[in-house]
Image (cartoon, rainbow, N blue to C red; front, side):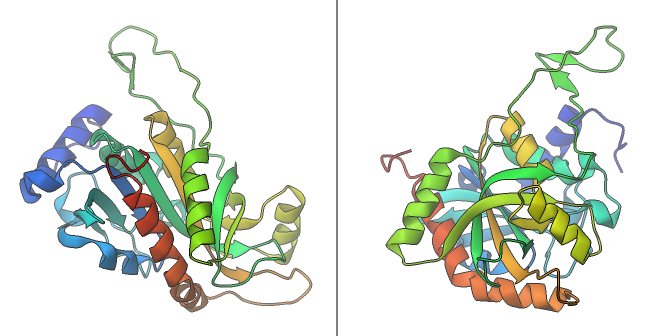
Length: 294
């Protein structure tokens, strides 16, 4: 096993070598990356001629312990556009660090992808939303309090024993791409699909929120709440990749009514949202064809 203290570029290169060994050359240049959240494995049905690489075969990749996360990298094409999908992710509540959660995104960005579509499951806070609907992320509220990105490389200088101070370059917090969001909204209108827009808040979990926490989140401007996405979006933006976030609303909280949310309920809601997710994801990827507005 390779040393976990290896520099980020060294670890990314090791992961790339293992991936490229298993993936045909024609598929090893994806244009779009996709993160499939809880229960979103059905999106892989859109992928033609898929090549699957288990996380267990990729150095420094961790495997999720959560139901609905297959733990594999999938290469292929959607509507003739080469893509790579992370079928499953890791979370803070599983005991993983920011570095471990974000490493797969660093690897995807090393393929020079143009866009990253990030999916997740979330609890609804906005009373206008319904279970099984989808929300497009316009912005987020980071309540992890641990997602500061630790740069190992900045302007060609490697942090550590170089004797040089590595300066932070300020980058815009994960601003979800206006262009991708506009495309997604148009796709929803064209297909008569419900696609909300709003703010995603994230807590570490693993417990679902209390009634008082729901009241607090609503007061600070959140429309939905989840336990992922923000670190991944931050890393993509840091790497110059446009991000589109799609959040499946699994339940809508009523702080005045006692209700216990279950993981089974979450999976069922994602199944209801499947039609919308498949249409939006396939449409967004298709827009990346040369000469189709990209």
